[in-house]
Length: 144
Ligand code: ZN
Image 1 (cartoon, rainbow, N blue to C red):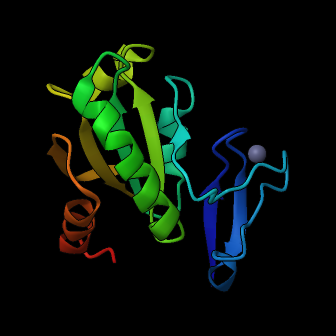
Image 2 (cartoon, rainbow, N blue to C red):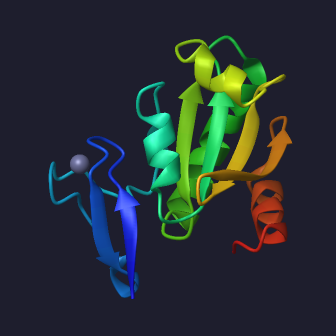
């Protein structure tokens, strides 16, 4: 069967067969890797469409440049994205640049991670964590 994946850059919907997800699929419209193995940056403009049409579950890291724990979390998030990027889409929102997105999702402390499925929040967790803890948390959500 196929999966419909929104491009993180141009937001075009790409149909990708399930068995090609690990073959570095690219956007048919703009050539951007759909599952780049690293977090993609979402903006006020791209957030809703990307989340709604992500195809896979999406894990979003809400962060800010002034936040120390966010800086600790960034390489962990990067590492887990490299390991699990064909099962979950990893994204980041700069809460200072895109405050409306953060407010709509009631972000109280950062870093906060929210897991979306089919465009709807499925779970969230706050505070910096190690890679093994993040993977354990994803496993508790049925993703491993
Ligand atoms: Zn594209």
